[in-house]
Image (tube, rainbow, N blue to C red; front, side, top):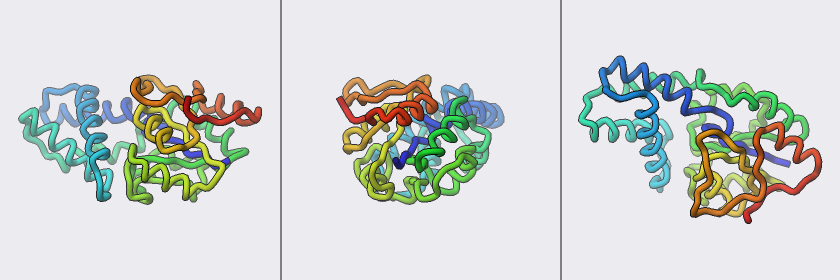
Length: 227
C-alpha cells in the first residue's frame, strides 16, 4: 500500500517548534505578543491564504503575507522578511511527535511511505521529516502538485501520483475533512490540539499512534473511508 502522512500536524509538532522561535523573534522585535499567541494568529491567517489560493504561489510567500497582515492589524512595526527568514530557518529544530521515528520505520518495512503536505520542497528538505525512511516518489508537496489543502484538486493529484491502493494519514480538521470529501481512504491520527470538524465527515479509522496504524494494517484490517 502507498501511504502519505501530513507533515505539520501528524509528523511534526509545529506549534511547539514555531511558538518557541516566535517567542524569541517577538522578544527581539519588541512585539508585545507571546509566542503561542503569535503562532495561533499567524497559523490561522496562513491557512486562510492557502485555502484562498487559486494560482499557486510558494508556501513561504503565503507565510510572509500572513505575518505582514497580522502585524499590520496589531499596528506593529517589524522587519517581516527578517523574521520569516529566522522562522523558516528554525524548521529543522521543530520536534517530531514521539512515535514518529519508530512508527514510520514500521510502516516503511511493508509499505511505500511518503508525505502529502502544504509546503515548499526546500522547506520540507530542512525538516526532521526529511531524515525518515520515505519514498522519494511519494514526497507530495503543494509545490509539486500546485494546489493547497483543503482543495479537492490537491487530493486528487496526490491519489493520481501515488497510485492505488492509497491511504492518507491526517490529523488536522481541514486535512481530515478535505481528504474524505475528495474520496480518499483516510486514517485519522489523533494528535493533541487537533479535533474533527464538527460539520464535516467522520473517518471510519482513527488511531492513537503510527505504530498502532502499522499493527492495524499488518492484521489486514480495512483502511478508512467516511461514515
